[in-house]
Image (cartoon, rainbow, N blue to C red; front, side):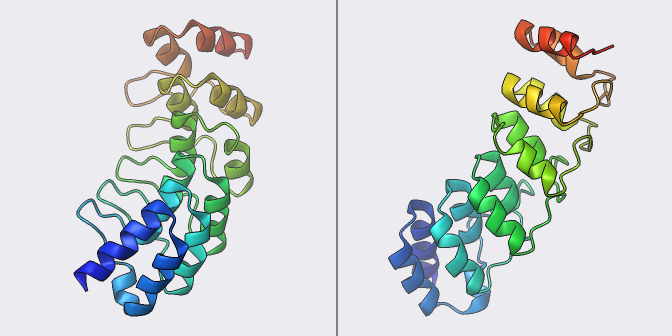
Length: 196
């Protein structure tokens, strides 16, 4: 069975739908959710790599959307962090929760903002991601975007009414992070947006 699970994970990684479906047929439902050494299930792997065609067969076979890897990241967080809106949508339709955080308290919105996927941010907000949610260290999606030096994400979050005044546990807001990171473009943008 170990080889079959390995084949399933590999097929999800490379997007090989034919071999994925063959592997699914040979496994019991419980085995579909088997996680590798880093805690990744086949569904997480396919979501992270953006192999949309692999998601539906995995979901139909009983893959659990709420499983998390060793960092507490779900398939939805992995899809959003890599800008895969189509995979994210499929996971949400299958019952994934857009508010579920990882072990740091970061949500799909925070990861997408940090990694520069400005195109997916409005969509995540539209499906219920809280724009001013704070992580365990009180970082917000806006602070995450500044930390990632992602001006397009900063702009998208401000357009969606992100709170410019919110601070993390160190008492720093997004503007203070921009100054600390010597990102003058983001600092100027925040100034123009009315940061206090």
